Image (cartoon, rainbow, N blue to C red; front, side):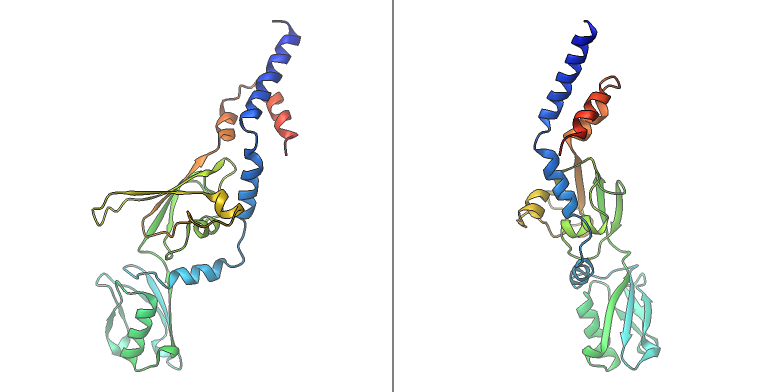
Length: 238
């Protein structure tokens, strides 16, 4: 093969690779941009935490109006209780924050409006991230029934090589001996079409998988001799 034919073959192969990926890049860019910082994130996390079920070894922050001696941080012990001084040990394990607020108010003789309880440290439950997420695979604290979208925003979004149409939530049901459930999450529909049907609300110990785009897969096996042509062609794409 003469040099002209080799260059022609390289260009044709690169064009074929680009054609396979046509139409995907713009959508992925739109999804990743929409996954940026959410100005309502703190509010959403507070709403999700309202349904959070407290357990050992979470740490609670309790504030009681005009009772500084009863206010502060309280670690949930092995018995599922917090120590409230002269009022004894209050069992908070298995209760939500509104339930604990009412319990503290009753035990201390306060009105519920004068008591504020929040989780200072989420330690008892986790979510598991796999694949193309920012920061790679890891476990993160479960904060309550936030959505998949809220979680991905909380952890920094998806990696450059992520495929927004290849996102799944796996619910193993290990504790209750049920069959595992798998939910497909269509990030493109959620973010670009505002269709929340697949925006799953997460439960403790759910596993979230983000797949790799075809472009990222191809990037790994494009040979060195073809890469300059391949990158030049991709550089002029939108």
